Image (tube, rainbow, N blue to C red):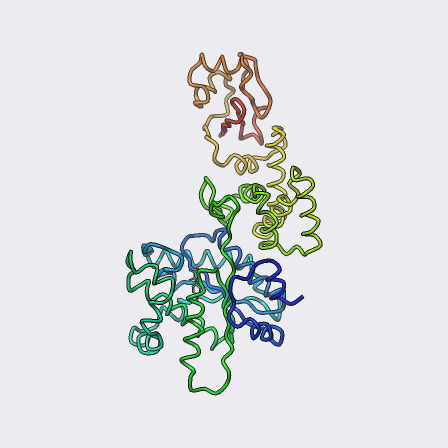
Length: 423
Ligand SMILES: N[C@@H](Cc1ccc(O)cc1)C(=O)O
C-alpha cells in the first residue's frame, strides 16, 4: 500500500499541501523529508514520538528521513501552540540538550541502513553563524509583515504580547527548509499540527527566493493531528509529570505502565498511530476489546510494541516481570534493579545490615507513627514483608528478608508501600 494511503487509514494526516501532487511525488521518487526537534529539555518526551514514528514510516516506505536538531532554533523558542513567551535557556544548556536529543533520535530512527539511512543535522551549523545583515537582507526581504501577522502562532499572541525574538522564529525554520532543500534535496517537511504555519512559511521562502528560476519547485508539507484522549485530559501528562523517553527519567516500567493504562476508548486509535501493526492484527485486537475488554489485550499489545520500540526487548521483559510480581504480591524473584524501577516513587528508608526488630524498624522508617501503633498494625495483620503478612510481634527482620541482599519491601494496609534499603 502506498504511504499516504496507509497514513490516512491510520488517521495520521491532519493537513497536507497539494495532496495529489504529493502522492505523485512520493510514488515517483525516493523523497528526502525532514522533521525538526528543538532541544527544550535534556530528553525528548512522548509528545515527540508521533513525528519520530512518522519519519520511520516514510523510511520503511523507502524514503529518506532527516532528523533535524534545533540547536539554533532552540536558542530562540517557537511560539507555535503556546500562549506565553518562553524563557531563554543558556547557550551551553541548549548545546548539552542538543547532544542528548541527538543520541535519542539515533536510537529511534535508523541512521545506517544503506540507501535510505536517516541523516541527522543540526541547524546551529547554519543559523549559528549567519550575520544579522544576511538574515535581514536574504531572508527578511521575503517575509511581509502582514503575512507573518496572519500566522496563527503570531496572531493568537498579539494580545498577550510576543517578542521580536519569537516573532522571528518562523523565518529561522523557513531557512532550515531552504537549506535542506538546497543541500539534501529535501522536498517534504512534516510536523505536529501546530507546525503548519512554519512549514508553509518555509515553502513560501523557497519559492520566492527562486522566483527567477524556470524549473518547477516541488516542495510539500504534512502535519499529524494533535493527540486527543476520550476523557479530555492531555496526552502524555500523568500525575507524576511528563513521560520521558530517557529511561533515567521515566523508567521502562513506568513507560510500560503508561501505555497499559490507556483507556479502552483510546487504545485502538493509539495502536494505529504509534505501532506498525497492520489491519488484520488490529481487527483481531478490536474484537478482543469488544468481547473481552477485561483481558486488556489491546493495551498489553500497545505497551509491548512501544516499550520495545523506545527501550528494548530486555526492558520490556523486565517491566512485565515487575508488573506480574507487584500484581501477585510475590516479590521474591525480583532483583534490586527491578525493585528500584517498580518502587521508584515509594518512600525509602536507609538502614544498616544489622538484624532489627520489626517494631523498631516500623517506627524508625516512619511506617508506623509509634511503637504502640506498630504493635497494633502487626497484630491487625496490616504489615506485609515482601508481600507476606507478618503478625509476630517479636519478629526480627534479617538477611532472609532482603531481596537481592539490598531491599525489603514493607506494605502497610492495602497499598501503602515502603522500601527499606540496606547498605
Ligand atoms: N519548531 C519545531 C521544531 C523545528 C525546528 C526547526 C525546524 O527547521 C523544524 C522544526 C517545534 O517546536 O516543534
